[in-house]
Length: 220
Ligand code: SAM
Image (cartoon, rainbow, N blue to C red; front, side, top):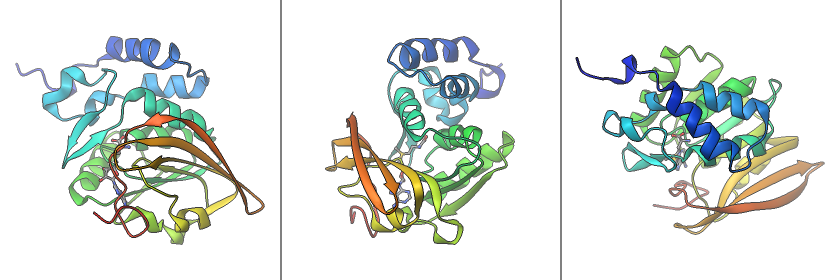
């Protein structure tokens, strides 16, 4: 019988990933640890990378894009400090793995992906897993999704040389944004907080994301 994604649960691999890549590297928010233990990452990676699904690195999702390293997903989630009251905007749905994590911890999730195939695949998988508080859009996330804003949390999962202005405008008062800022190859994971229209910026660590391509990002 073919050992497909659906007939292996990978519980022990997920447990080990959380112990060695998440907790030992300093993630300590209980809700982030619980959700990293819960979401079946192997369902979000292409079949040919199944045996590597819980390894400590990003993997291709197809379409020239990547599913981020587990630690980076956990770190960005911890930095957002999500609660069930949050309305969260995600730019870069990709495989939908980070979307699932956001969905578990936020009240509502709005996710935008510029690649139609990735968006449709992620929506199909997340719906089949029972995630109901997510709205999907195919298009340029650098212009945000004004119709449902403002958002108390915004996560950009692709690298930009600056913060797209429409996303700052759509961040609510006391809101938090996490975004990799830098050049096309290397960025600094940055947290932006808005308090009465004043913005504060906190640099967390170096990172490497695929480029954010769009009107307020890289042009190609
Ligand atoms: N969070 C994803 C996951 O868990 O699989 C990984 C996201 S991947 C690192 C970055 C994604 O951003 C890619 O799928 C890419 O197509 C998408 N992207 C790049 N520029 C974008 C834009 N302007 N709007 C929406 N999506 C964009």
